[in-house]
Every structure is written in structure tokens, then in C-alpha cells.
Length: 264
Image 1 (tube, helix red, strand yellow):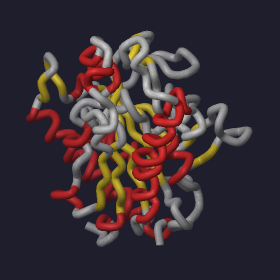
Image 2 (image 1 turned 135 degrees about the vertical axis):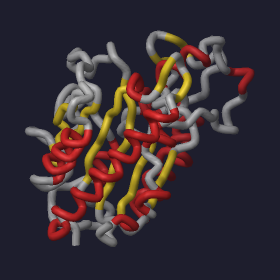
Image 3 (image 1 turned 120 degrees about the vertical axis):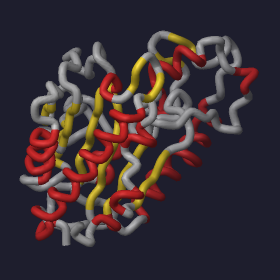
């Protein structure tokens, strides 16, 4: 252990299942289960919970991204507080929340998550997500890796040429350690593929490629883990979830050790 782990912030924005109390359940459409199945990063609140291993900081968004997506730009109201997803309406016809009510939800919950994340003293951010086989990114590229780690994003909301969210060496060291530990398992690890054209507000708002923390920003890596690695028939595979959770934590410790001079 490096002693730096307690200043690592793990952000888990999409594991939540709850509906905001300000939304009446009578207003919701009959598609809630389908929407949840397709739009929840299932069990990432367990997969990326390293607190017993690293004594790190952690923030989880308890609400479902079906209702509020804290990883979308707040100016993108239809994505940050959507009315429909995957061609399914979230609300019953004529019962959709007004624009003013959606902006209230945005201010309370979306801004609240990012304010809490920004306020914490931290030297590194790990932004944890899940994906499934068959998903495609904003460019239509299919998900063909089991674990995707990113420190680069180039979307319509990013400056020309995209943004880097960590100095050189962070992603490379972390992925090298993952590959060592998963050697022989057939698990495929990709770097800056598939999701680089998809805007992520956590990356844009809280990551940077400079040395140490700067205001609300710190070096940041985003990870997408395919759910087939730790879920079987819709149920968490406890053995494999625990096995890969520990591999992620061990790999982060090695990265922190090697990149220490860029963190403080």
C-alpha cells in the first residue's frame, strides 16, 4: 500500500435503481423494468467498492439514470433528465414532467452529485461503469472487449481534438497490471476504444492530464467492465465478482505506486 489510496475517489454514477421522490410512480409508463434492465450498470456498486481493500473515498448515485443521468452534460436536458430511452417512454402519455420540473431535478440531483464529487479532497478519480456484449458507442462501433479503460474523450461537447484525463503512464500502467493478472483467462482488455466518442460528464468535469489535483480536477481513468464477467443468468456470480474486484484494486495500487510523483 502507498498511503495514497485514501485520497482516491471512486465514482459510481449508474448503479442506482431509485426514482426521485419528486416523481409520482403513477406518472411512470409500463416500461420501467425494460428501461432499468437496459440502463442500469448492474452491481457496479459492489464491483468497484474498494473501501475495505484500499480505504479510499467513494461516491455512488442512488437514483436510476433512467430518470437522471449525472454522466451527461447538464445542457443536454433530454439526456440528463430524459423523457424517453431506447424508444421507450419513461412516462405515461400526458404525464411527463414539465421542463421547469426537469430543471429542478437537474439542479437538485445532477448538480448535487458533481458538487459532492468536486468538494472531496482527492488525488485520483476512478470512474466505474459496466457494459454488455452487443452495445455500440455513439459512432456505432460495437463493444468487443471485456474491459475498456479510457483516459481520452472526443465528443461534440469536448474541445477540438478531445481531452485527456490523466497524464501519460496512468492508463498504461493500470492496463499492464490488469493484463498480467488476467493472463491466460481469455479476458480482453482495450484502451481508449468504443466509448471515446461518447460524452461523459464525470470525465470532462473532474479529470485532467496534469500533475496532481487542480481545483475540482484530478487524474482520472474511466472503466467499462462487461457484465458477463461477473453476472450469470441475471444473478451476480459472487466468486468471479470478488476475484476481479480484487484484481482491479491490486492494479490500482501498483499504478499509484509507480505514478506517485504525478499525484502529489
